[in-house]
Length: 170
Image 1 (tube, rainbow, N blue to C red):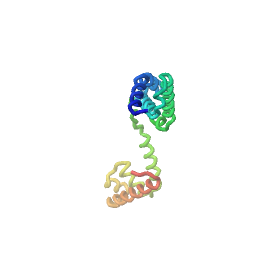
Image 2 (image 1 turned 135 degrees about the horizontal axis):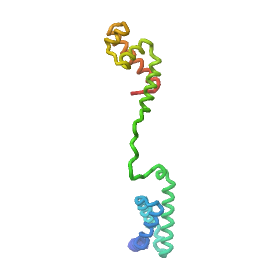
Image 3 (image 1 turned 135 degrees about the vertical axis):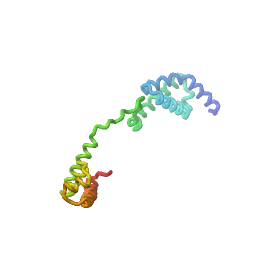
Image 4 (image 1 turned 180 degrees about the horizontal axis):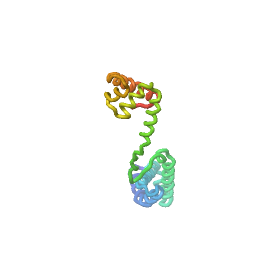
């Protein structure tokens, strides 16, 4: 068959069957217009690749097109892409912070503080959790302000190491 004859038959096939094929594909895809367009396009492409279909009578050509469209739709349903892809007209809901993450972090820090020495726990408790100044913490502990600063530095370093050992990173 010549290329011109194939082109003419393909145009005739399209003119005679495209509306019915579109309607059928839309039904197969549950109204998903984009997917229906893909099914019709792939069906007509397969018809073009199999010129023997172009020579068939109107009824048998339509039956062949519908069968191919149905198989393409079924293959689409079975594919991994169709199972993992979800289309929607609304974006997903935004997550609302519920304090869970903060509570878990608090438990991790409290547990890690238990691994520190008593002196380190005291200085962190006074300076960070009770909000005392270095001078006030020094008076409460009965040590020099420089000692409070030094203990705070080493306490934070030790706390960071304990948290890293437990897999907690910044």
